[in-house]
Image 1 (cartoon, protein in one colour):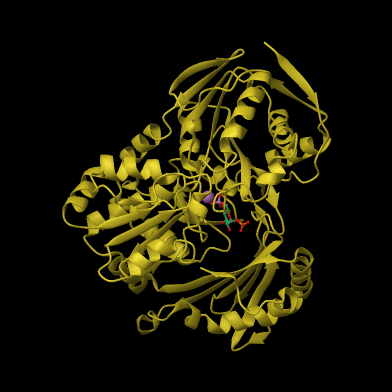
Image 2: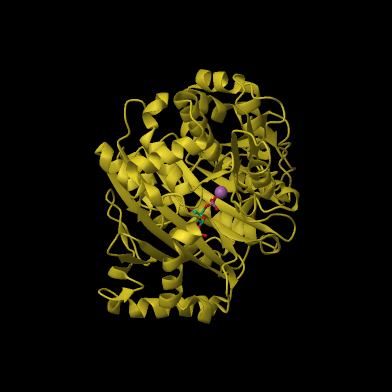
Length: 543
Ligand code: VG1
Ligand code: CO
């Protein structure tokens, strides 16, 4: 065994964000940059020697190179066995599934999710703990602290492993097991949903298209939808994972999934359209000429959970991130179950899921999931919708509109200002914060502010706290405006403004959300001075 100890110097920018460490590929290619961060992950863990680690990524540029480095470092650091997805592929939810199923001490997932890929694109590294969940803040803080003090790392001097061939390989004293990235995950999906009912639906003339945007879900969607559920060949589009996602932006929303949107809003569209993101944890759901807002999707899944075999006995509770709309709260109230409000990012759901307090959870950012893994899960959400449609025999639009009739409609939109100058964005937030205490009682265009604060969260299970998780301004009628800065970008800052208004009146439920929210959009600019601070007249992306 030829273990090398390499001297290195710390980088000061390895602080994990909302979902792992994200940087540009050229940053990750700097000598020792990746190695430092990986060593810091190992140094943050105790008693992992001889145990299992799961490793894989979304197939983006630098995935293969990083996997070889990480395998050799894992061997040098005493890991017992690494389960690596064939070709280096593992979607984020599939990695979470493997960690749990094979009792690994953790997993390293290589992805920058929906950020563009390629030699000039983004790359990312995320560490998940033994429960399959993104590492909680105390772990990411330890990793960051280690990264600032690192002096050396360990790596095995060995040849690359053939990660394209299934089987077991020896790397020093460590075993590398190249596994089918899809099989265990597909089995898990089959154990949750009514595959027979979905098969019947797909055989009955119901048509669908799934756009994998040349990202990781291609092989998963093909196996599950086309092979196991007998959807016609070609149902899954852009199914081959490409290192640069075909030059696209693997973000399933109305702006970036343009091809799918054109199909679903064109002449004679299929009954159902869906897309997922770079690493397979997000989902977008479309009907014929119809878009389901992610916050509504979460509420609808909760309201219809009894139609899915795995949740037929009832769900214990639900959780949503703070900026996610309160549509799901109304369902929880009706079902008589708890509803938790957490900060943005999936790591905050882990404890609630582990403790059995919640069964379903979700975020407005096209993420929904359940206790089946500890990540949000794109294909799971898509299958959930197919299961509901199969059981209810209604179209996507009918299901959503009936939901609004029962619970009222929550108009919702997120306005993103991307690539804003960092210091201007910070000033905007500081300015907002300093004015918060003056807001309650003030009127804006007929809306009276009842609460204005910077959201903080105390985990009900372990008591850990998270501060400064987004500024929320709540109005008397329950409408809300939320502001926060993104923690996943790599260029400048991204300001997110989240807008929400409840409409119980059935006659008023068919407006364009931008129209229905027009006053709140104006108020957001008035209060936060968005145009002044960012120099932008319009958001760059509206979802
Ligand atoms: C964004 C979303 C957040 C999500 C995170 C990771 O974070 O808003 O809801 O959990 O991305 O998703 P931010 O800090 O940029 O707002 V993914 O699909 O990138 O793993
Ligand atoms: Co993602």
